[in-house]
Length: 341
Length: 275
Image (tube, rainbow over all chains, first blue to last red; front, side, top):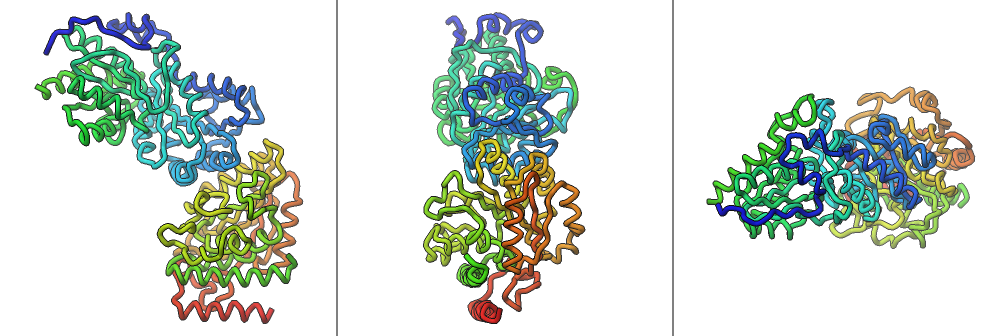
């Protein structure tokens, strides 16, 4: 292992966050917000600009924050009650007439309760429905397993024509909302219930399908999405103290996957760790592994939810218990580097 | 079209259904034949459509929520001029525009993909909401099955349409009392069906779904009704027009042989000349 002599270089990460990465105080000090809130706030601006945008709710508008849209644009807001299947089907019907429906619910309901509609009525006919799913992954810590959408990304990724996006912070989420409204076709937007720090500077270049290198590094690459991006940056900082120069990539679009940036990282750093707050099967780790194994099978380790359900608890404590925090990512990096030797 | 002309067209469409399914050697004749009179009345009398402009934004919409009965839809579209009748012989074949269940991007005139039961109705609710929002005067017509009404999402949709006073939406239930396994009321009873829909806030009409004059009258009443969505419970006979298929469960999803098809076509035509 060569010692890292060059100054680390961060891209699009706020300087105050960079300073806090090595501090235990990061999550208490940093400005934070659930990405669902950034989504709801951005919808208000989007609704102003684009009269084709309509919002469909299933009795969690107060939780997601789309009740603000309902207040501002009552004609374009439709609360279907606790009936996610009908909401998804109606969203499909609206899209056939040229509207841009945002169907909003929790990830477990969007990806499972209403999956038949999501597959057959939205994705099969490739209708222009935007599915906004809060409580994705174990981001509702306290709510417990029934509300922890830990499979949603894997499920949505397996559907033909799907586009699956899991932004890491409120800034990227706001940009993602504009991008998905512009995009013609179904999109699944994964949002967090629990707060995540404002990670990015305003010039963060969000483009669907284009992953972003947040930290330069040459020894190993961590590829992460949503709320594990910040954990990966913390891990990289810890690894720097051990002399390991870690590259970190925010792979906010799970599908279509940015093969080019992943393969560049594989060839330049020779080892990959993926980090996702999602079940071990079929998500980011699987997707990256598929690309590597067919092109450049460098050693790789995955961080994800093992074959288990989690439990209730404060968000950071739950994800730590279930192996998803920086210390676990550090261990995975150390393991992958041993394998590379 | 006049009532007499509609009756003749329904005969033609029934014959198309038999020929199509016989040629494909697969498909769902029973529920296609039971819905034939309603679908004929819609496409040849009620609906504001232009076969030359299947994507016309102001057209009436039709959704066959019981998508497995699509042979009746394909036959109506072909007879109405949306595409060449020669396509009917390609049902369910590779590269055909006529899929085993309706695909809105493969077939001109199909307003919504359907097949998984309990979906099309919700899509129709979305289209009707969009029509209200944008002050369009198109009407949304949806045919659902009685067996399909066992799906929970049907009742989610049923609850939602009166909330928004979707009088621009009409549901016709093809009440043929048979589903894949058995009689509907044996598999999972849906009665008292008119009471259920009334309790959900619907304007409910009940008709003989094979009496063309009654079908047209009910569709007209539904279109003119204000402030509430209308459901027409159309009492029908599964396999209507073919004696050996009528009320026989196994003809839900089985194709007639060439010999059986000849008998069926002869019966359908004879029945027409007798009436």
